Length: 291
Image 1 (cartoon, helix red, strand yellow):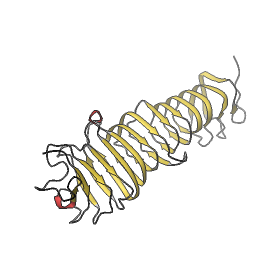
Image 2 (cartoon, helix red, strand yellow):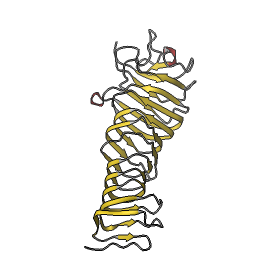
Image 3 (cartoon, rainbow, N blue to C red):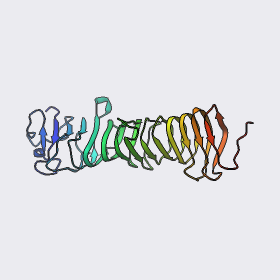
Image 4 (tube, rainbow, N blue to C red):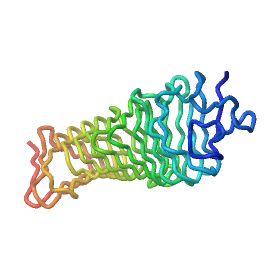
Protein backbone atom coordinates (compact mmCIF):
# COMPACT_ATOMS: atom_id res chain seq x y z
CA UNK A 1 0.00 0.00 0.00
CA UNK A 2 0.96 3.63 -0.39
CA UNK A 3 0.67 6.40 2.15
CA UNK A 4 -2.67 8.21 2.14
CA UNK A 5 -3.83 11.69 3.05
CA UNK A 6 -6.99 11.15 5.06
CA UNK A 7 -9.65 13.71 5.96
CA UNK A 8 -11.69 13.32 9.13
CA UNK A 9 -15.46 13.58 8.56
CA UNK A 10 -16.89 11.69 11.53
CA UNK A 11 -19.66 10.59 9.18
CA UNK A 12 -20.42 7.45 11.20
CA UNK A 13 -19.19 8.28 14.71
CA UNK A 14 -16.31 9.79 16.67
CA UNK A 15 -14.33 6.53 16.51
CA UNK A 16 -10.89 7.16 15.02
CA UNK A 17 -10.06 3.59 14.01
CA UNK A 18 -13.06 3.20 11.72
CA UNK A 19 -12.54 3.70 7.99
CA UNK A 20 -16.00 5.14 7.29
CA UNK A 21 -15.15 8.18 9.41
CA UNK A 22 -12.40 9.12 6.95
CA UNK A 23 -12.11 10.21 3.32
CA UNK A 24 -9.11 9.36 1.14
CA UNK A 25 -8.37 12.66 -0.61
CA UNK A 26 -7.02 10.80 -3.64
CA UNK A 27 -10.33 9.06 -4.30
CA UNK A 28 -12.92 11.16 -2.47
CA UNK A 29 -14.27 8.03 -0.79
CA UNK A 30 -13.74 6.18 2.46
CA UNK A 31 -10.53 4.14 2.35
CA UNK A 32 -11.11 0.51 1.46
CA UNK A 33 -10.20 -2.51 3.52
CA UNK A 34 -10.89 -0.95 6.88
CA UNK A 35 -7.97 1.44 6.43
CA UNK A 36 -7.55 4.37 8.83
CA UNK A 37 -4.50 6.51 9.73
CA UNK A 38 -1.61 4.45 11.07
CA UNK A 39 -3.27 1.10 10.42
CA UNK A 40 -0.61 0.02 7.87
CA UNK A 41 3.16 0.36 7.67
CA UNK A 42 2.79 3.49 5.50
CA UNK A 43 3.22 6.99 6.92
CA UNK A 44 -0.20 8.55 6.43
CA UNK A 45 -1.12 12.22 6.70
CA UNK A 46 -4.19 13.51 8.50
CA UNK A 47 -6.13 16.69 7.70
CA UNK A 48 -8.96 18.24 9.70
CA UNK A 49 -10.17 20.73 7.10
CA UNK A 50 -13.97 20.47 7.08
CA UNK A 51 -16.72 20.83 9.66
CA UNK A 52 -17.23 17.19 10.68
CA UNK A 53 -20.43 15.36 11.48
CA UNK A 54 -18.82 14.15 14.72
CA UNK A 55 -15.73 15.51 16.54
CA UNK A 56 -12.48 13.56 16.45
CA UNK A 57 -12.58 11.70 19.77
CA UNK A 58 -9.83 11.07 22.28
CA UNK A 59 -7.58 8.43 20.75
CA UNK A 60 -4.23 6.80 21.48
CA UNK A 61 -2.14 6.41 18.31
CA UNK A 62 0.94 5.06 20.12
CA UNK A 63 0.63 1.43 18.98
CA UNK A 64 0.15 2.36 15.31
CA UNK A 65 2.49 3.50 12.56
CA UNK A 66 3.64 7.08 13.00
CA UNK A 67 1.92 9.82 11.04
CA UNK A 68 3.82 11.79 8.44
CA UNK A 69 1.84 14.94 9.18
CA UNK A 70 -1.18 16.21 11.04
CA UNK A 71 -2.94 19.43 10.04
CA UNK A 72 -5.89 21.39 11.42
CA UNK A 73 -7.38 24.26 9.40
CA UNK A 74 -9.88 26.99 10.45
CA UNK A 75 -12.69 25.05 8.71
CA UNK A 76 -12.61 22.41 11.47
CA UNK A 77 -15.11 23.70 14.04
CA UNK A 78 -15.10 21.44 17.07
CA UNK A 79 -12.75 19.84 19.61
CA UNK A 80 -9.69 17.65 19.09
CA UNK A 81 -8.61 15.16 21.75
CA UNK A 82 -5.60 13.13 20.66
CA UNK A 83 -3.96 11.63 23.71
CA UNK A 84 -0.99 10.28 21.79
CA UNK A 85 0.02 11.61 18.40
CA UNK A 86 2.98 9.68 16.95
CA UNK A 87 4.95 11.85 14.56
CA UNK A 88 7.67 10.71 12.20
CA UNK A 89 11.12 12.28 12.59
CA UNK A 90 11.47 15.86 11.39
CA UNK A 91 14.26 14.73 9.04
CA UNK A 92 11.56 12.89 7.12
CA UNK A 93 9.32 15.96 6.97
CA UNK A 94 7.08 15.15 9.94
CA UNK A 95 4.95 18.18 10.80
CA UNK A 96 2.05 19.19 13.03
CA UNK A 97 0.29 22.35 11.82
CA UNK A 98 -2.46 23.83 13.99
CA UNK A 99 -4.48 26.64 12.41
CA UNK A 100 -7.53 26.06 14.57
CA UNK A 101 -9.28 29.44 14.75
CA UNK A 102 -12.65 27.73 14.32
CA UNK A 103 -12.04 24.83 16.71
CA UNK A 104 -12.80 24.33 20.36
CA UNK A 105 -10.23 22.89 22.73
CA UNK A 106 -7.33 21.18 20.95
CA UNK A 107 -5.34 18.65 22.98
CA UNK A 108 -2.29 17.06 21.37
CA UNK A 109 -0.11 14.61 23.24
CA UNK A 110 2.99 13.07 21.64
CA UNK A 111 5.11 10.01 22.13
CA UNK A 112 8.31 9.61 24.15
CA UNK A 113 10.76 10.60 21.39
CA UNK A 114 11.29 14.19 20.27
CA UNK A 115 9.95 14.13 16.72
CA UNK A 116 8.59 16.64 14.29
CA UNK A 117 8.19 20.29 13.50
CA UNK A 118 5.19 21.78 15.31
CA UNK A 119 3.66 25.07 14.14
CA UNK A 120 0.79 26.85 15.91
CA UNK A 121 -0.93 29.53 13.82
CA UNK A 122 -4.20 29.93 15.72
CA UNK A 123 -6.48 28.29 18.26
CA UNK A 124 -8.45 29.49 21.25
CA UNK A 125 -7.21 26.74 23.58
CA UNK A 126 -4.32 24.60 22.36
CA UNK A 127 -2.74 22.24 24.90
CA UNK A 128 0.55 20.56 24.01
CA UNK A 129 2.04 17.62 25.92
CA UNK A 130 4.49 16.15 23.44
CA UNK A 131 8.11 15.52 22.57
CA UNK A 132 9.12 17.59 19.56
CA UNK A 133 12.20 18.90 17.80
CA UNK A 134 10.93 22.40 17.09
CA UNK A 135 7.95 24.51 18.16
CA UNK A 136 7.00 27.81 16.53
CA UNK A 137 3.94 29.85 17.55
CA UNK A 138 2.48 32.75 15.58
CA UNK A 139 -0.99 33.04 17.10
CA UNK A 140 -3.47 31.55 19.54
CA UNK A 141 -3.78 30.67 23.19
CA UNK A 142 -1.29 27.90 23.98
CA UNK A 143 -0.52 25.86 27.08
CA UNK A 144 2.77 23.97 27.14
CA UNK A 145 2.11 21.31 29.75
CA UNK A 146 4.58 19.93 32.29
CA UNK A 147 5.37 16.83 30.20
CA UNK A 148 6.39 18.71 27.05
CA UNK A 149 9.92 18.60 25.63
CA UNK A 150 11.12 20.97 22.92
CA UNK A 151 14.52 19.66 21.90
CA UNK A 152 16.12 22.27 19.65
CA UNK A 153 14.06 25.36 18.79
CA UNK A 154 11.36 27.40 20.54
CA UNK A 155 10.11 30.50 18.70
CA UNK A 156 7.31 32.82 19.77
CA UNK A 157 6.40 35.07 16.87
CA UNK A 158 3.29 36.78 15.56
CA UNK A 159 1.28 37.33 12.38
CA UNK A 160 -0.03 40.88 12.79
CA UNK A 161 0.47 42.05 16.37
CA UNK A 162 3.05 41.14 19.04
CA UNK A 163 0.08 40.11 21.22
CA UNK A 164 -1.09 37.39 18.81
CA UNK A 165 0.28 34.61 21.04
CA UNK A 166 -0.75 34.05 24.64
CA UNK A 167 1.46 31.30 26.06
CA UNK A 168 1.74 29.61 29.45
CA UNK A 169 4.65 27.24 30.13
CA UNK A 170 3.96 24.95 33.07
CA UNK A 171 6.54 24.02 35.71
CA UNK A 172 8.26 20.80 34.65
CA UNK A 173 8.37 21.60 30.93
CA UNK A 174 11.71 20.90 29.20
CA UNK A 175 12.86 23.78 27.01
CA UNK A 176 15.71 24.06 24.50
CA UNK A 177 18.90 25.88 25.46
CA UNK A 178 17.98 28.94 23.36
CA UNK A 179 14.58 30.64 23.11
CA UNK A 180 13.60 33.54 20.85
CA UNK A 181 10.55 35.68 21.65
CA UNK A 182 9.69 38.05 18.80
CA UNK A 183 6.39 38.79 20.54
CA UNK A 184 3.78 37.16 22.70
CA UNK A 185 2.32 37.47 26.17
CA UNK A 186 4.24 34.66 27.87
CA UNK A 187 4.14 33.29 31.41
CA UNK A 188 7.08 30.92 31.97
CA UNK A 189 7.29 28.77 35.11
CA UNK A 190 10.62 27.05 34.40
CA UNK A 191 14.27 28.10 34.30
CA UNK A 192 15.69 29.15 30.95
CA UNK A 193 19.26 29.12 29.67
CA UNK A 194 19.52 31.62 26.80
CA UNK A 195 16.46 33.85 26.42
CA UNK A 196 16.25 36.61 23.78
CA UNK A 197 13.28 38.98 23.75
CA UNK A 198 12.58 41.38 20.89
CA UNK A 199 8.97 42.30 21.62
CA UNK A 200 6.01 41.40 23.78
CA UNK A 201 5.92 40.65 27.51
CA UNK A 202 7.64 37.67 29.11
CA UNK A 203 6.79 36.92 32.77
CA UNK A 204 9.54 34.79 34.27
CA UNK A 205 9.19 32.53 37.33
CA UNK A 206 12.55 30.75 37.39
CA UNK A 207 16.23 31.40 36.84
CA UNK A 208 17.73 32.76 33.62
CA UNK A 209 21.35 32.08 32.73
CA UNK A 210 21.72 34.62 29.91
CA UNK A 211 19.09 37.24 29.06
CA UNK A 212 19.14 39.52 26.03
CA UNK A 213 16.41 42.10 25.49
CA UNK A 214 16.22 44.03 22.22
CA UNK A 215 12.72 45.31 22.94
CA UNK A 216 9.65 44.26 24.89
CA UNK A 217 9.54 43.58 28.61
CA UNK A 218 11.04 40.86 30.78
CA UNK A 219 8.83 40.88 33.88
CA UNK A 220 11.09 39.21 36.45
CA UNK A 221 9.34 37.51 39.37
CA UNK A 222 11.55 34.74 40.78
CA UNK A 223 14.92 33.07 40.22
CA UNK A 224 18.38 34.52 39.68
CA UNK A 225 19.53 36.16 36.47
CA UNK A 226 23.20 35.38 35.87
CA UNK A 227 23.84 37.81 33.00
CA UNK A 228 21.54 40.35 31.36
CA UNK A 229 22.28 42.43 28.27
CA UNK A 230 19.63 45.12 27.82
CA UNK A 231 20.03 46.57 24.32
CA UNK A 232 16.43 47.77 24.28
CA UNK A 233 13.20 47.14 26.09
CA UNK A 234 13.00 46.68 29.82
CA UNK A 235 14.11 44.33 32.57
CA UNK A 236 11.34 44.88 35.13
CA UNK A 237 11.80 43.46 38.61
CA UNK A 238 9.28 45.81 40.22
CA UNK A 239 6.27 43.45 40.24
CA UNK A 240 7.50 40.97 42.87
CA UNK A 241 9.19 41.26 46.28
CA UNK A 242 10.70 37.78 46.18
CA UNK A 243 14.41 37.80 47.13
CA UNK A 244 16.59 37.19 44.07
CA UNK A 245 19.87 38.27 42.49
CA UNK A 246 21.03 39.92 39.29
CA UNK A 247 24.63 38.77 39.03
CA UNK A 248 25.69 41.05 36.16
CA UNK A 249 24.03 43.33 33.64
CA UNK A 250 24.91 45.72 30.83
CA UNK A 251 22.39 48.40 29.89
CA UNK A 252 22.52 50.29 26.57
CA UNK A 253 20.86 53.61 25.61
CA UNK A 254 17.56 52.11 24.42
CA UNK A 255 17.23 49.87 27.46
CA UNK A 256 16.02 50.26 31.03
CA UNK A 257 16.13 48.33 34.30
CA UNK A 258 13.64 48.69 37.15
CA UNK A 259 14.67 47.02 40.40
CA UNK A 260 12.30 49.02 42.61
CA UNK A 261 9.92 46.43 44.03
CA UNK A 262 9.33 48.58 47.12
CA UNK A 263 11.91 46.85 49.31
CA UNK A 264 15.58 45.93 49.01
CA UNK A 265 14.86 42.37 47.74
CA UNK A 266 17.03 42.25 44.63
CA UNK A 267 20.74 41.80 45.12
CA UNK A 268 23.41 42.93 42.67
CA UNK A 269 26.16 40.33 42.22
CA UNK A 270 29.88 40.62 41.70
CA UNK A 271 29.51 41.47 38.03
CA UNK A 272 27.63 44.67 38.82
CA UNK A 273 25.57 46.74 36.39
CA UNK A 274 27.41 48.49 33.56
CA UNK A 275 25.45 51.53 32.37
CA UNK A 276 26.27 52.30 28.74
CA UNK A 277 23.28 54.59 28.66
CA UNK A 278 19.64 53.84 29.29
CA UNK A 279 17.93 54.13 32.65
CA UNK A 280 17.88 52.33 35.97
CA UNK A 281 15.45 52.58 38.88
CA UNK A 282 16.41 51.37 42.35
CA UNK A 283 14.38 50.94 45.54
CA UNK A 284 14.57 53.77 48.12
CA UNK A 285 17.86 53.73 50.03
CA UNK A 286 19.72 51.46 47.63
CA UNK A 287 22.84 52.80 45.95
CA UNK A 288 25.28 51.39 43.43
CA UNK A 289 28.86 52.61 43.59
CA UNK A 290 31.57 52.54 40.93
CA UNK A 291 34.47 50.78 42.64
